[in-house]
Image 1: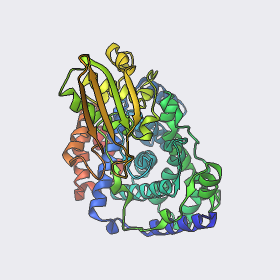
Image 2 (image 1 turned 45 degrees about the horizontal axis):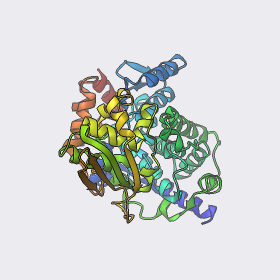
Image 3 (image 1 turned 45 degrees about the vertical axis):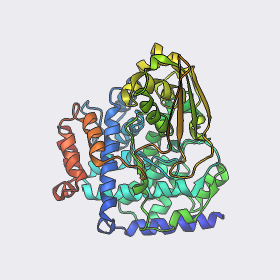
Image 4 (image 1 turned 90 degrees about the vertical axis):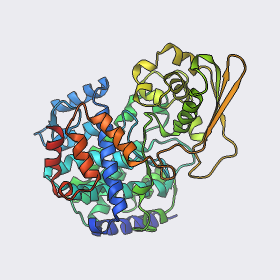
Length: 452
């Protein structure tokens, strides 16, 4: 696949995006966009008490310019738009509760939203325009992810895709032409971070700031494109295929535009860890109904290859725990849950959890299954009397094949935001319902209402 073909595919995508109006977006897609915005905003709020994040945000505030946009940490912090986007971008993935794209490895929502939430508040953009920009940015980031596939998990998508998503979404919010958006996105593609996938598995918190870096870089790529600082039209191929070694497919950039919407293939989380382990949690919770974790002599997990790569029985940090299959299986068994309480820092040294982690073994789930059952788990507990209990989950709930009911996601959002921001839940409910008055408001006014 030639670099020129990739350039033509991106040009077709940006030309289509530049002329796409809110009215042309099908209503189910609009509702999905509103749900993604609300869910990812809640994920940002959820991280407000993380000590490393709080320290990082305080440091950013010291060098911030004039207050333009809100940092959603319940501390009345308002910074310049670039600093706010960076601060919110770091929070977005901290708790592993953000929405993701199910077809390939990509979390397009948090690649787009930190940049356009800040920009929309700073410029008093309309809520409708914000949602349109999210749809376009999401479509772009997801298509780039599909257009360049890797045979292994060497690069984490938060590093390699966030700047592209931020640039595409901001270009849409600023109503750039297709040609101008192409230049900005191409520039952003050269600013991505080659974040190693091994880092979160081994517990490095730097992984959590890759969306923050991408938000800042994507915004600046759009800024600088207006003065002629742009990337080559072949930049996507030059970076992802030539430099990173991905297999390119130009058809994924422009095929079926306006027919199959990427945002409709997203998934939502109620478990606070990497989605690769969600099937294991679901199977474990079924086992918890049959026996106490105190009787477990061994845990065996047959699962997909991506989950097996998360092999770390002794995670040292919260991000390491969220990317450890041993911790995922052990903490779910001990706590009978997979939410935030099962992945707090205190669970890392929890005696029962730590002991169980070293009783977990991993093996391939055979035969390998096709999408949407490509992330299965079969969990077997061997009890102290030799009894074996097994539960199997082929596809975890939350994806387009087994979606959560809207009320389930709404309850999750309410549970996160109700205490720090009492006015946020009803405001987001109106937005998710696509109420006319909610869409007609500026995002500035909406944020003021939610955070009052």
